[in-house]
Image (cartoon, rainbow, N blue to C red; front, side, top):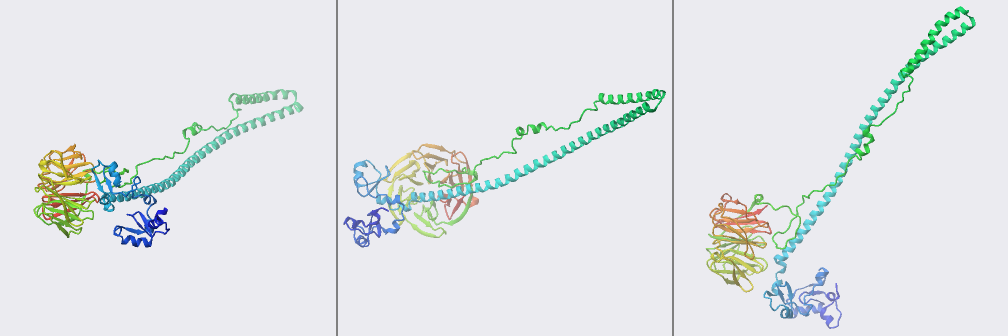
Length: 560
């Protein structure tokens, strides 16, 4: 923390060094105990908000470095220029913002900043970002777990594949060994038989040689002569026996060898590996949320927007209303419900549990109503009375009345302007800076019907019960034909996806229209309790649809 935050600013100006104990945001300086008492007693500073310096030190450094004075003129900011979106001191206004029309006192701009819609949107966005990041982290951790599980599964598959190959090779080896043994045994048997026959002939030759030696030694010449004839025949037979072996290639050697199958020779080419590890990707089934009711949206991966056929409404509450001609309704941020009764000139505020909270009587007709959250203002139209009443909801009193004419019904707010249904006067705009009224579109709008704004589009009902969508400059985007299922359309609202809900007063139903305006269907009917439904409001923050009959009952639905 810088020195200016830790020392008393008043004492330092007097060349006294004292530590600050509190911080005054409006004076932008720290105060010691003694100066704090003088600060609290001074008329000019007694209403200033101070906080302990220990609490102020908890603010981030970049926040502490924000100056509340103009760096150019060293004067305190007094004015906020909406056109340039910047704070200005008195001299800035004179020098650079003299032609700017949208200048507001900065105290008025910031007094409700912490409860403003913009602040809430930032809170909601940060919450959504935190939730989405947690969802993404859990999804990726889940992916790591699945990778580990898949790895173990594939390891088992590889081992089973190897075992299958081993078993098959074992069977091939056994078959080949059996074939080898059989071939050797067969050839051994043949050769052994051949050797036996040779041995027999060897014995015969030996016997002949022995006999011939005996003849030579002991026999007479006649005996020798006669015996030689027999011996010659035996020799001839043995020679023929030997020649037969030569002719029949019986003397060839049998050699056993081994030749691999061609498949095994080319096995490295045919089967270079046992398999392939595949890394595949698929879209995550994780759905992220985002806040839809702001013009500047954070783009995150989202599931496709449901069509009108996928809409599911769940009835969460049935409310008994007061009055005989409920023409407008709304939901406050805290869940309270507002109903306007045209004939009694009253506005009924009902608690979440359905009990009465309080009643407003603005002194004019109460046709349609719109709540401006930024300033906690309630805008009420008066139908035939040709005026708009703005009520401060904090003190529950009418703040001012803006004359318009000739008639005024449905109304909504966007960027400092009120857009309203002027019946035969067309679609009109009130600039809240100077209460000037201009006609945006010259068209005959349906009497007693509402209008709605979503994103940069405005929706209104025509006298033939058709619905028109335009941009905020009045340019036509789409228009439906007259819908057979919708009679005397009155209420209109738009959800976070641009789907349009319209109530039919005579048809006793609610029809939903697709964002492109090319499809529609009946969403609720008389069997759901609708009887002359006139008022309709959609709470985009909580996805709730409020529908009110002309008399007695209203219904709060949750959209899924």
